[in-house]
Image 1 (cartoon, helix red, strand yellow):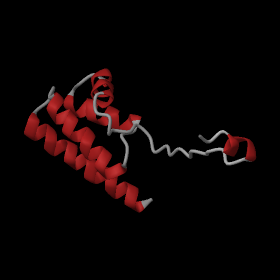
Image 2 (cartoon, one colour; image 1 turned 180 degrees about the vertical axis):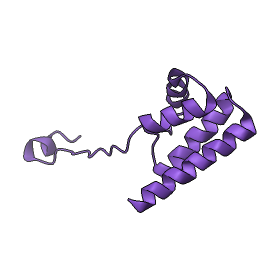
Image 3 (cartoon, rainbow, N blue to C red; image 1 turned 60 degrees about the horizontal axis):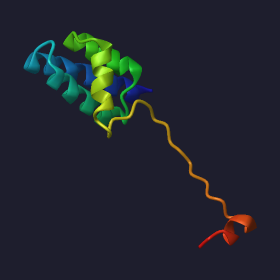
Length: 95
């Protein structure tokens, strides 16, 4: 829990630095913030998207659109388990 609070504080501080550097309304600054959020947390949650949008004074839709155009950015920490059939029926279908 303490580690998450530290990460949140680091992220908020980083966003402030980016806004000072890029200025408000900067989509480039928002992209940088999105990438850093991905690096810190492993994903960009809805609340992080709102923080970025508010800090850069951009619409939430712009942040969502930016995320859609960067394939490496994830909106959640969902992991998938792929199960392949190894039963007798499946084994017979192997070519």
